[in-house]
Image (cartoon, rainbow, N blue to C red; front, side):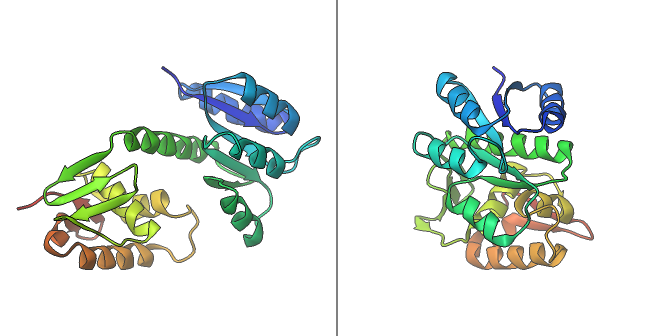
Length: 224
């Protein structure tokens, strides 16, 4: 069954652009041109899987809509905005926003991010899985190594999960950076190597599960 996405933006051009790309990728799409309409649609429709929400809108702005939705649901919310100040991003994350997309943006990348979070949420329903001596609890968002819970930062957790979900496949540093960090993350490739180094140290006996692919990136492989 196709996922349903609600697009909320007062610009028809933006709604059509995003809608066309989502429909092309197999999604069902609902549209709202202001915050009040968005809330009415959200409360009427019971099958919305993700919301793409503009900040600056008439009637109710994106912050107000997000605040109301978070009282009722933990549905993923992408905030779509022309504002780039760090304070606005922090406000969004504090309110429970899952992604912060800045205009102008690439519709293809937006769809990729939508697919990524919906795929991750679907996998989270699985519960615990074992990979060699390493166990992941997706619902709790933590890893266990031989009965001991690993203390990982959010990015370390996401990086290790990304490698596991693509196990036995080589991921380039670019792919890792684009999936775990912002696509324009200014520190670049160095942060990938730094986080892998920290992860290996914490993984101890199974540090060798993260294999280096020379001049390319990394691969997760369960090796005894």
